[in-house]
Length: 453
Image (cartoon, rainbow, N blue to C red; front, side, top):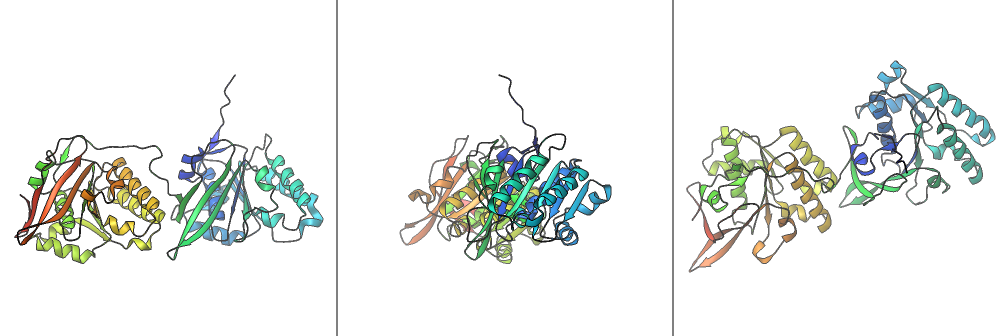
């Protein structure tokens, strides 16, 4: 049997294309959502991708007039006016009215306008407003006729129908719309810890299998961006090249230092020296002229700089490190991942420290925290970033063991009482791909120097 190859178009949303592969030519996608959930942005992004590909596009709006729509979309970098001047894009505004008395005439007007514009991509925003005055049977006949009228060649339009979904309802419109569409995507918002989360649920896709149906997304400078777990298509890994931690004795315990592009997790109780080890690691990179970024979820920027000065580090070297301090409770998982991704893409760090993973864990559910942590680890590997993270936990007692499995190197710190003194202890529990010193050593901080004895 001959295999049928389906030609897929880019949706304009990279994450969505990774999940469903794209949108088949001539198909109909129903996008439904609550007010402010991002429906029009989704539709505009879909159209704009087509324009960038050299296709023709048409936007039929019953919600906004052309000036307001263009003004909103320009804020996202979608310059529809430029394509309108070239004749590649058409905007048709239908003011709200009782169309029930002119169903046949309305259908003819729509199909004639679509035929004259000759688009390969079409948006109707919203189908709810268009058929709101129809009975269920009238609406079904109208939508079916509209879809049939744009599907056959030579027109073969790929359409996005936008539907409004009130907060109190789960069903879309009259209910039949989902059966007619080739794909159904729901956009909605939730509130948690006082923060709004935008979620995309892929309820139906005829041409692709789904392992997961719900994803958080943001609306940023590039429009809709999905937060995808990095498990989808893992890439990258560490290199067989060593980088120094800034402490020669610790390098020796690790078999010669850390592998470039590896992930190291340092765990221990408060005051055990986690942040100091992270500072030594990042300053060593700055001394070598590497791009270095330090992100803290616990310490203010000025306090971190003061700690560096107490180690005898000059301001010229400190200023070579880009330091960020943020409160994780201000971020949803998607916005935090986007924040970290932008930092990595902008500064392309050779070394990255994320100090305070335990603080991060208190802001999200266990599943969200683990998924986010692993996604950041896999992201750093894609960019060959040597990542060091700290967490407030006792690994010897198996606290927070889940993240430890994703890390390449695991260092633990703790306190022991010897006679009348409390000593800091350090041990390397794991170094992936390398032999390491398994002994328990003493960690001392003296005269601005961190030593392993």
